[in-house]
Image 1 (cartoon, rainbow, N blue to C red):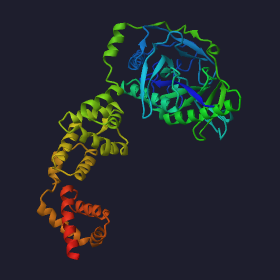
Image 2 (image 1 turned 180 degrees about the vertical axis):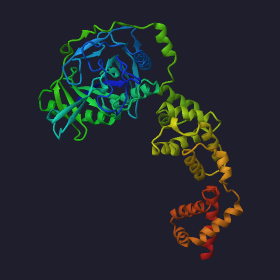
Image 3 (image 1 turned 120 degrees about the vertical axis):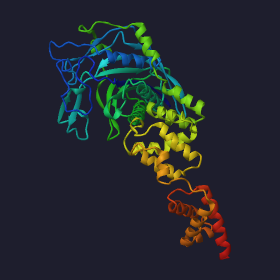
Image 4 (image 1 turned 90 degrees about the vertical axis):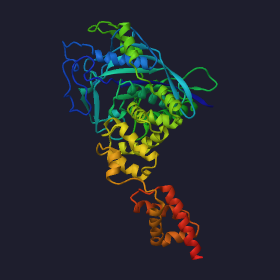
Length: 489
């Protein structure tokens, strides 16, 4: 019997604000524990929340970017549960009247293309962070001690609840990645899963292929990466299938994904909505938004990732792969388009940016926004490459220098005498010398080993400091090799 999974995601995105949702405490990563707190985010008696306007603006921007509808009148509620990470004994969230409804996200992969619906998007405060010490190899309950860091308490979040209509872990991963990219493009969230500013829970149930009734829903909590999401879902599908085939019940529960052991462990029974005893938040009035303000936010949205990928393909003739790579981040896509705007070949620019420049950025652990040179400087460098003024080897060398300091590539090439050697007579002298000094490579080529030619080309390029025109080097080497072989025979 085959089983069909049904997957829904709950994405918790930390909003890119400077202060918390209901107080002026700063939002910062990797700070000293419990250093960024006040009576409000510690839930001390008598403290009152004051709503962060910037958080509301970013949440509205997210709703509009995800194709949803902003609710002009929303309200806050208290989600009651007793746990060390909620100092007030409840979390301020939105329940009956959330900030946004609906929306759809197009997920495109090699084997799938589907619009995944969004049920709701709401504002809420984050809980504190629990640090389990001495947990060993067992479940979290076996930890020797649990410490609480309240720096994260009160940080503004949006929760994006998808419709449960994804049938594969890969589809769920694609949805998560697309949502994360949209939030980053619009400046709503930094989306750094490794820092916890984007976290995801997933709900999954199975049904027999011949049945229309879905099985019991299980929640997987706080997955730290898209890779973890895929592995956890595959593991949970396998676990539920095993239970169903053995005719054992699938329990409604919340499970934790153990990253190191790559298994999930049961945390607790799954709470129902009524168990949270939602109550209206008495200290916050209903949130009323002017429609003109919402329209202004919508008018200032940037072009979103999916639309930009399509435009890069249509406008510049790029492959779908190249468009996806270049549109991966807004700063990268902006850098590429600003480079091409300086009258340089679009595909040549794409190849160098996706190749050598991206390698430099990763190696230096920087970003395209932090490069010491402007896109116009890269365009001047690539123009010299395109017209044959410099070789690709020299282009790479100059680009490496540009990543260290802001130089004019044209002046640098002229000052260092790096222009490409295209004079046949000059190169012939070098080629003849290389053939005489590398008799073993010449003999290997004579015996039919074609890789020997590549070694000889490398020797010529090395001797000319990368300035020799590669095509001409190949031609002269083949002529020289043919002449040498004829003399030998």
